[in-house]
Length: 297
Ligand code: ADP
Ligand code: PLP
Ligand code: ZN
Image (tube, rainbow, N blue to C red; front, top):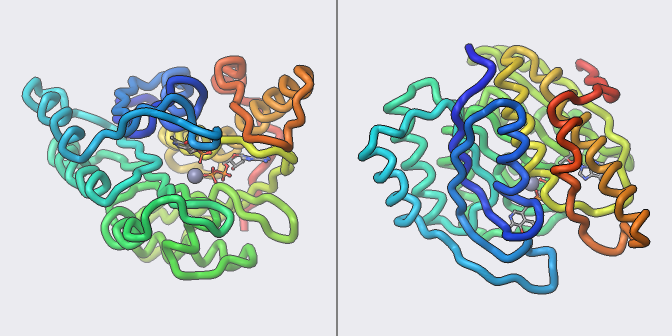
């Protein structure tokens, strides 16, 4: 085991603002990782704005890049990280990439944020759900769905902590040994539920972290969360609860700063989706001050 690594991060790029690779690459670098970003799209800004323009990479173009790396013997990675993926053909190529990289490093860790939607709404084509369920989840080492995505992947309705824990167990049986449901609202409280199955057939070790919900809507937080979970869980491979405490603590400090900055500038933080203060929060990325503690079940 090593506390660093080389990460292939296949995610969106936005010229301005922080989602996808823009919110994942910098924090992973700060935590000491070499990060090789592939930009699955290049957009002017994130899709929460009134409009955006830009380009979308297709599966063949992704494979071209992999062939270029292969021709120079540059395909050794310790981790692959994927987030928002807009088409079945691109997702199929990602599967091909994972399989290829595992022929070179059988211990490759694949961290998958199965981005499909939020708050009851899908924002990817419906056919993607099936591909995630049948083909992607089985290859993933760690999965970081939100509540809606965990429901889509398991067919379960998650209305309680018990349901959340059961969803994690179902997902373990399909492949990933680590599952973190990054946000689930139960009785008005925001929870993260984590689950680590330390061996096939073993009962997973599970925990929750109660998070104070900030009354504002942020974009890029899911992408940042997954990147931090990758970074910390690699440093603490047997302590997913500790990794999650560190990641959540960074998020909370960063969101507080974001909110304060917007308020100081006279914005109403509940009125639109806020850009996170990522660069300004580099201290809290490097050395999070753990205030929120995980509770073991
Ligand atoms: P996604 O965008 O994938 O749905 P989440 O909403 O689960 O991502 O957000 C990821 C993390 O960001 C959560 O675990 C939480 O720590 C933090 N977060 C996001 N929005 C808020 C909020 N309004 N208040 C507090 N924490 C938040
Ligand atoms: N990628 C792009 C291009 C986006 O526009 C967004 C959200 O608007 C995201 C990714 C995901 O953001 P989040 O981490 O908030 O789910
Ligand atoms: Zn997400």
